[in-house]
Amino acid sequence: SQWRSVTIPFKTSAASFHMRLKKNRNQKNYFGMGLNFFNDHNGDGQLVTTVVNYSVAFHVQIKRNHHLGLGLQAGYGQRRIDTQAFQWGSQYETQGFNPNVASGENYGSQAFSYLDLSGGLVWAYDNNSGRMKVQGNDYSKGSAGISLFHFNRPNYSFNATGERLMMKYVVHGNFLQSLGGSKVAINPAFLGYRQGPNRQFMVGSLVRYDLSVSYTHLRAHETGRNL
Image (cartoon, rainbow, N blue to C red; front, top):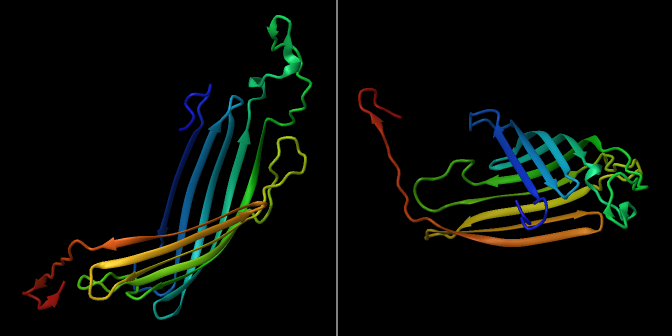
């Protein structure tokens, strides 16, 4: 929520969930799926944007500790607006604002929906093959990818003017590397995107310090096997 001082504060809600479909971590190739939801209310005209996306991905082990994943996303979006809440200069008379006076504006439709398609490719590396070592500080893992959003250029206009949602190009990457013989690891990352005339690039890093390392080793004496 933001801008509480305006007549109707802006409110945005979002939630997402994703998972690996197979729980067997020894599986070399596997599927993943995800679901995300976005809802935004803003302005006196109550412009509401709602988007629900479903994604599916398939990851292939191309060599030891290296995976390549391809993901596709299909979404359903809807935008609506309350045109009766607007006030125009043509509706003001000597006595003040008169909502019964025609504004002379061509609003078009007050709501529209659209199909949104996106996709991406990601490379991932993990020297522990997805397993964290309980002793020592020997991590080397990371990922890099590229995505293309709105590649079907859906209609994005209330007035059917032909305005379409611009494609969005995204590149990203991060790498976690432990410093041998210490409890410190560094995690640099970058993110960049381009959508029409808009561009943004961010780069930064996290530093991780392991406060302690502990593990429990249970043994089944009656069977002589490690649990």
